[in-house]
Length: 117
View 1: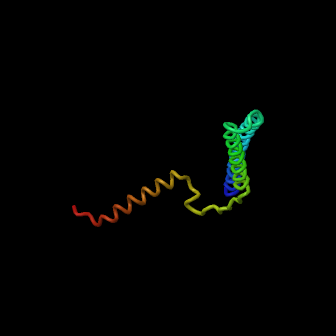
View 2: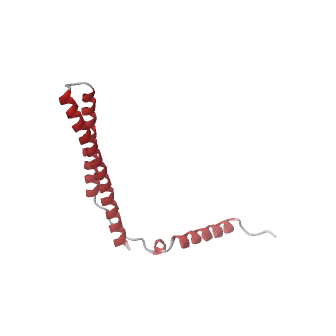
View 3: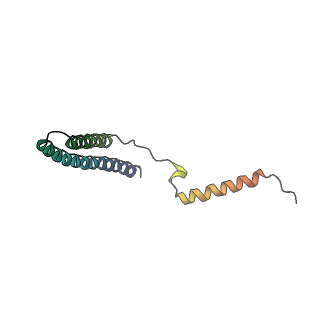
């Protein structure tokens, strides 16, 4: 059972890293689009609104590279192996819930003291 949990955690980590990388790629594509449009505008008329487009394009590229770097770091983190718990933790959660409820009811009855009829 613990082996499956390890590989499940490993797969989740890889998927999360891939999601960050995909987000980074999307920002890079948007940034490249802005840069291409801005470069054309700058070459057409040197300075003005084109400067804003250049800054936006470089900003998107920088964000994309940062997010891709975070994705790479997350996917490289090691997954800790947690040994399975022995005893009650291996039972079904519903059984544990019912058992806990019954233990609580019993403790409540015992704390009341002897009955006075």
